[in-house]
Image (cartoon, rainbow, N blue to C red; front, side):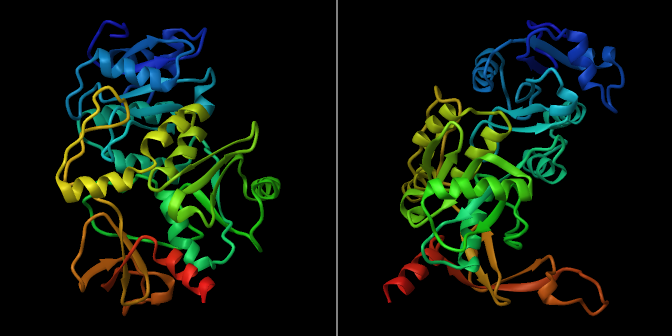
Length: 374
């Protein structure tokens, strides 16, 4: 089955010179396909040396019919001769959040997951979260700094969280997500500074933080006093480059760069098109206007049912993020936190809580501005 003209099977693109089909399939041997020959029965190898991932996305979209949950919606990109160590890209032409997407995973697991996704046995949202938790192959976490002139750790929490989750929960219709500790983000590490400073000084400070916390030393997200109006400042230390982008898109860009899905020029282009993504969702939801851009790889038709994040304060004082709107009050179950104590059985079971107030997404920014002005 491993021929480029065969429309069946999971496509496996190789952008590395010199790898043979057998060598590529050897990377992909897994519990479900235990030999090279069995892998060949399940996949189609396509050699595209030197091509960028976004070029391959366009080729996949243009070449193969892609119904929902098909073998052609999900594919792999082998971009390293040492894929067993460095992993491969597991790709989704159009994820639930509306954009082309990718995660980096070990080749055997990526192959099994692509097959599972193609028959709807797996969910892309769960796949993304799984790669964040497993961190295999190891993808270095990123730093998000609080560089506001006035602000505390509590007010930094929802801002860092917005950067961290990115577009992950856009269009998610599940239960409201409990926002955990600021010290337990998915892909980023939140760092508060003793005092705000210019970007050059922060970049120099970051080298020490990166070494101490095993973070990426070259990519930095910064929340500063322009965050509310212009978004996060995203910085590449060497060669030095900067751009601004608003949540929820901002959080994805450095991660996509980190895993090799997009280079800096590509994330700049993406930011120029989608920094106002949340604003467009609100406008489309309220006006009912649909927009479509079939020539653009990373957009889809947008309808009035698309939503933005909403934040709710609960009776216990927690802040809950949700795509779905909720009436006030709404009672729900959530994981028990240490501050809740143990339940009547002495265990950390679920606890009932109640949403008592809806917060604007920039609640903390306005609070800080009011305090500074006062």
